[in-house]
Length: 318
Image 1: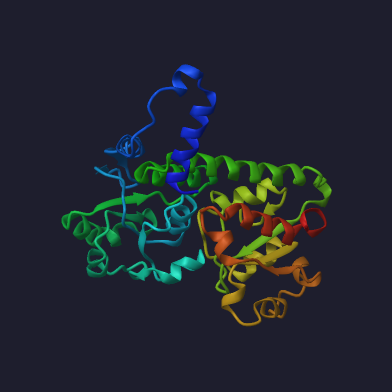
Image 2 (image 1 turned 90 degrees about the vertical axis):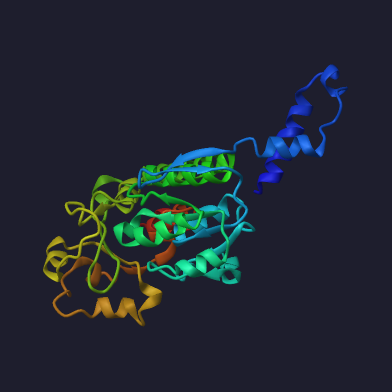
């Protein structure tokens, strides 16, 4: 929903709730309405790098440096304001019409040429990006480093931070509440799964066996749907050995990279030495959409639903 429609909706609601005395007051001038719409500015926000960013006016030209920031910004109604995105952006469809500014190594000159008011950077880039970000700051561009969300709550904080910086706080709050409701619905369905029927899962991020550890948002999703993450005893996003996976003997193997590798499922099912793993014996190796299950943005509920349906189709299949 755009910010203009939110403003209009609030005005309509206030008029509906007023008595006759208020209704007789002169109508707002367009100048007064514009002043109210930008009343949130100037605003000072603190990024994940602990730098305070003073944003004088509502950003009209925004560049986003990672897909999760892009998806959040679009969800907050900022599609028209976005003028540049990363090379890795795939969603929504409109990103194809935006200028590309590079991947993890972004093109500073290209970004400056787009004359953005605000650049939404990301903490996942780490210190390697700092030189380029400082060049953008030196060019007079506001740079906000958004947190790298390790948990679902931290993802909500990303929404709130971007909302505060762009004058879309109300939209951010509404989106967070909608996502909370979606996760709650999944949890309610999962309550029907008996303990003895719970399945163990190995989440395979790529064929070199990177996976999700116990302190990740994906582990939260597994807990939410009453599934056991076989690598919950690991931290972060570790690379594990074939022996470790075989020893854990997962009931289900989820492939987060399926569409990027030809015949990914068959490749796993025919791995030498894996034939006694439950997931292989029972052919419970399933591709899940890599974008919606790995990006901490507005489609993560959809990603959680895809994971739930892959692990417990009898419970979650629509």
